[in-house]
Image (cartoon, rainbow, N blue to C red; front, side, top):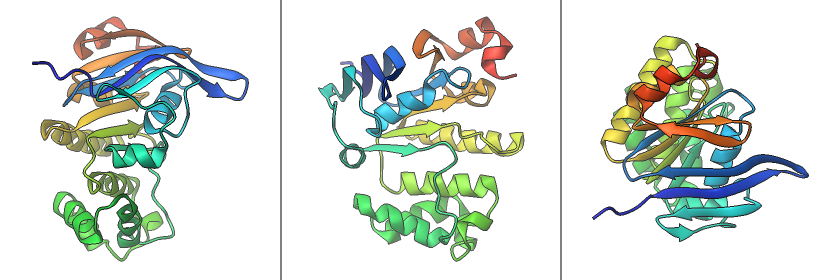
Length: 234
């Protein structure tokens, strides 16, 4: 029996003050899926992720989690329900050590010992850097730390915004290999990415956003073939 979508946006409109950014977005994330949300900057990808994380409230439409409407639920409560977000720019605290960054994530209920075990097992380099200030690490290591903080809270839905930003192509490839492993372990992932070729190899489906609307969804290979390189980011 199909359990139905884990996360679903139906006719979502949202914006900032009088400016509407999302004009009726429909999006579905099934259990264990990796949905790549593609499109140029300014298309509404980040705002869509903010709605899914509870950071931005929809003005109309319905946001559902496991079939239940969660419009108006706070970001903290959504995190407790298993929705975890890694924002654009990684969201680590540069003036805190690796260990202190992990400690901050204990607010969701996980212990520091659990968070450290998850982080250092998956990313041994972080264990070597545990007393180092996060801001002094490479961009790739900071992204590993951001992922570790998220994974330590045992999420069911992971929201990722522009993981590739500021990283060398080789590091981007490594990070997305890790995201692919997480999906294989059963995590459901919605990832917004301007550079589609970084994420399409691990995606189970793809959605193209233009001017605040999802204009096309489908198989990643079909979408990569159909869309112009200007949308795919080279």
